[in-house]
Length: 292
Image (cartoon, rainbow, N blue to C red; front, side, top):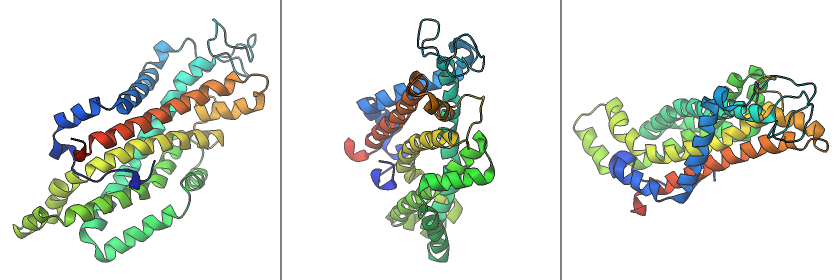
């Protein structure tokens, strides 16, 4: 599940204790499997120049659409490029899209959600209606529209995905802030004359982070899929730079002749998405104080 309804409400790691959260996280098989999958692709992305068997853009005109073999473990594409090397380098674009786009959504969504939930009134109404307006448009449709407006590139695709995911974090942060805002210790802090800024940053924000962390992890899976979709449509990472989405776009023309061109980038996308979802599910349980 990728909506804010899928995440638990509760105290943050600062309240439950980092060690307690870590112990619960280690007991979650889904979190371990998901983290392992993500770690593998992070290693591949970082050390791609040393792991990839060849230059991802180097063509071999004597090995066009060659089936998987010892020379090319994942086969070659329509230009004779090594598919394994391109899949390894393509991890960079997908992971960058997953992380950076979610960071964009967090940087915009968390402050707006905190302000809306804490102050309420007209400010809350304006921010909430803005979020509702963005949510009225399907996530991928909005991302495609923004990417088309900004122009095809990986950077613009990440911005488009981040803006499209922002209303999820606005609504989630607002909902959690409303819960924390009604707690007695907040009223006590107000009575002591603590300023709104300090109150929000020191007391409210730490207590709404747990569900936001979970939602961010789950949204990274959606962002990876969105980046692949935009690249498939020619609105993301542009050729010849490797991208799993653009590799699938080329591979669809040769599905009957060279199915491996679509198989391996498709499996890579599935593995990363499953990894983020499993990690998110594990974090959801680990950050839930009721799982003690």
